[in-house]
Image (cartoon, rainbow, N blue to C red; front, side, top):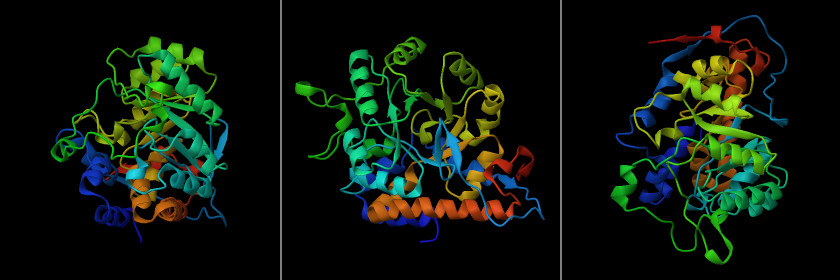
Length: 346
């Protein structure tokens, strides 16, 4: 296959329609879902010439760990709906690509088993802070023990977005034999993820007291929240609208990126997810100030298409596109990109 969209088409053929719509869908009228991708299309790359070198440099360092390319795997739930090996297969593909996987709290494989399946993979752990901070701490301890290098705290979910595709299918639980393995709580069984409107900066402070892991705040759209995150000790921020799955009609991530970068002013790394489907999208985000991007749905499409091999092909295709686009833009390194190389095309 020659593009990420071809992987999605094959995944749609292979997945149960309810499961495809779970992965593919967004909140409300899916305005933000569509806009995330469309916004990249409204930006044009302005290449430079006669600045060649033999090799391109794609690697980046994030929170002290090297990634071979500026593309991380974003946290997405329920990988076993896409393939029996689930997050194990994804982690092995990520290890082969030498990048970073953000393992979802709603993984269908326990974080310990993901780590064992891919001992060479660099893993971060995505967390929804639970109102029960003792249970939150128990999850954090499991992530630490499994070797996760950072926590990625999703902060845009005081309530669950209304996703009408899921409602139409009646998709409100996993099939028999699957559960959110990171939510196991001893004899109490598997707890539900609680999205609570009570979660506040106070909870973030309590989380910082629990762990020494660096904490990335995922779901930042407002520049003032980015400034506040730094004041409260965040190690990085991720510009994200939850892939259009929470509040519909919010701005696209690439649209808000320059304002967030300006607010952060180099104090911490800035990451971005939402709508990245081409290597040229990655270059546009990096040129506008992101340190790296994360992709979620495309990796799931690869997983559904051909398991570990498919997920690896998705990451390999993105790497090849980045390298080619970087060459055609006259850049030796991803660090050579700058805002002057991006123009609004329409």
